[in-house]
Length: 465
Ligand SMILES: [Fe+2]
Ligand SMILES: [Fe+2]
Image (cartoon, rainbow, N blue to C red; front, side, top):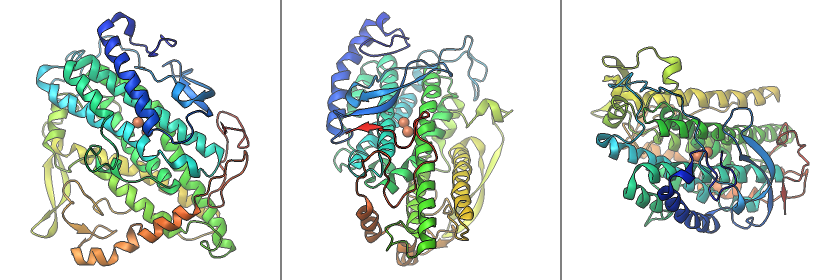
């Protein structure tokens, strides 16, 4: 591990001068982007952050105060396993690709650019949140997520610059030029153009949208293009913390709301009513489902056949890695009616991955509902049907109610305010967002965490303001 170089890395960057020069040229542009679009107002503050110092499972994280622009963003790949082979698809058992195969060059570039684009996008979406943090603990977690998304961008830019020549360098530049929510140069995927301007949005985003990241990275961690697989395997260890922030964040909001429900009117007491939490869940869950792509997809079949993108835990949970003649049954809309249809499995792999994701989200819902049970309440939170409020794939262009029944566009419009946050809901949640920055103090709409960071108490000064 070359930790103290200008670009920390474990890929022997100093042996590849051309690549090193290209990345060192990109570095100041990245830092400019970070100053312009990273956390607003906190760039000179000391933040108690973890930094990757090794890719070994027992010692990769180091905790210390760091000013964010000095965070050691670097290139860390899980070490190569000798004799790696392609684990699925038409080339099953062949040696893994160490360079980009010509015929898959465009597909791979697209996969990497699409993943890479989400990383800076989320930092942009979360840029203003620091100013309304509910506690120093939460502020620190926000910044931890932000710097790691920055590192994920580095991970993808390394692949582009190392393996895609001039095109890759152009794509790396473009990743710093698009902007979340900008009508002229938006980010590629729609969930990453949605505003994430209050902390309930942030927790839903890290719960649901970062979790999409987990599943995409897991599928790419199986890739027969070995550098991509090894990059994603390391990114997944960082991603786990982002989902922890979202999952426990919502749980703490639910816990506080439950306390307030027993005391009186949640709104009057300055909390977030359960039905508002539910609407935020509906919004981010449905947008995050879109990120998996169309239910029936020739891309998914091609990527699988080529050995580029596998299934979740491909090696661990499947025996048949070719999947040549299986079918998958799904609901489609034909002539205005929901019907079931058989689809070749390889064309349904987006939907298979989405199903894994939904099951994982359900576990989060179960944890939040346990909090409600423990508070002695009978109310429950739930996930909307996956057909609800979709903008990509088989169900986009149709309107479904929250249970997944096909309804007319008029009916959807009439009932939309029951299911999705209204302007008034958003304004109410925003009105609660007042910064709390005294160590050990917490905003009134959220419960404190069960534990601090790395054995430190909640009262610890996680950010020195
Ligand atoms: Fe990420
Ligand atoms: Fe993330």
